[in-house]
Amino acid sequence: MCLGIPGEVVELLDSDRHLAKVDVAGVRRNINVGLLEDEDVAPGDWVLIHVGFAMAKIDQDEARFALATLQEMGQAYADEVQAVIGSQIV
Amino acid sequence: MRFVDEYRDPAAARALVARITELAADRHLKFMEICGGHTHTIYRHGIEHLLPTSVELVHGPGCPVCVIPMGRIDDAIAVARAPGVIFTSFGDMMRVPGSSGSLLGAKAQGADIRIVYSPLDALRIAVENPDRPVVFFAVGFETTAPSTAATLLRARHDNVMNFSVFSNHVIIGPPLRAILESPDLSLDGFIGPGHVSTVIGQLPYRFVAEDYGKPLVTAGFEPLDILQAIAMLVAQISEGRCCVENQYTRCVSEGGNPRALAMLDEVFELRPTFEWRGLGFIPESALKLKAGFAPFDAELRFAVPGVRVEDPKACQCGEVLRGALKPWECKVFGTACAPETPIGTCMVSAEGACAAYYNFGRLHREVAVTMGG
Image (cartoon, rainbow over all chains, first blue to last red; front, side):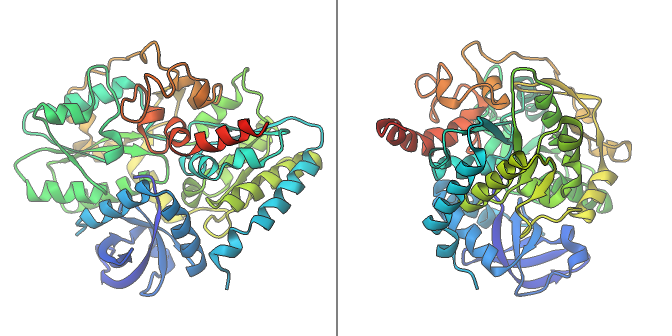
């Protein structure tokens, strides 16, 4: 639950419901970008995702560092990615 | 363009350690971190063993799973057992022991308890099951609370009246203050939490410097981030300064996320008091739903026992959470209490100090002790 994982915004889906499709570790899922409504999230942006919500926009370097740290965490990261894959945010 | 290797450069780490050693001089300094992610990085990279003996790291209540007392778990199980309820929870909470078992145990006994990744998943379950009450077990600091708030706003907008939230959200400022007030913890400064700060910014930490005269530096999650934050803390002390500084400017701004804060303000208010494992009752430290969201408040819709339950006698989680005890100093660490058979929350949660130390920190410490460190 507590891990913030980086994902790349692929498509904005529904502006009323603040839904966007992101790519997380090669898998595409929906997340909510409503907490970043004031920051003009666009396809190609990287965001930090926590419990299905984009928490912050990050640059690509930060995304790489975050991924490296997370991959070292081993199971905890694998579990978090599995959780994202299992989610169905509408 | 920076590369990960550059950020993991051992030479950079050595340079920071040299600077820390020089600035610390002949003081003995104790810094507390209050972020589960930092606990993890510190143990994973053996940061405590890179530091000179003049600098000691202490782990504080940075894991929102760990600070939930057993009585609240019993309350959650009581709600889960109410007729027809679909009880949804983050995975982390499933194995936390209550006084007679965990949510996982209750599920095995027949309660309809489902693990969700996001509060929005819980809301979707409510929409898909309109004839059943669906409850979301909301846990987390200010990193997670805005997501619950956004979900409640959506629930109210869409009229999902069978959805409710059992709120156990806590905020970071009050336990910090409680720790600063603790006579037995003589701390010299704090490493501020990473993701909480993306939401709340830096201003809520000002009281640490202004009222208590201790520096606080917010840090990122890379090992070099932590070392740099420690260097900044030691520099302040060596130069006689005391303020709140931000090492994690990549992700944290001074004002935080105003939209997330506005959502928190719209949905939640502070409980007069809340019990924290290890810290006792702390006033205005936890969030409850505002009156406008009463139909979505599980505590109003269901009867919860609300009984205060003491930790088991053998459990020393309270002292570990306050930083008074290191994981390996707990009498049951690694013996009666291990990840497969946890007694207390510090071992259950992946972010708990004991679990982090058990999984990652022991090897570093064994090596350090063997080498006379």
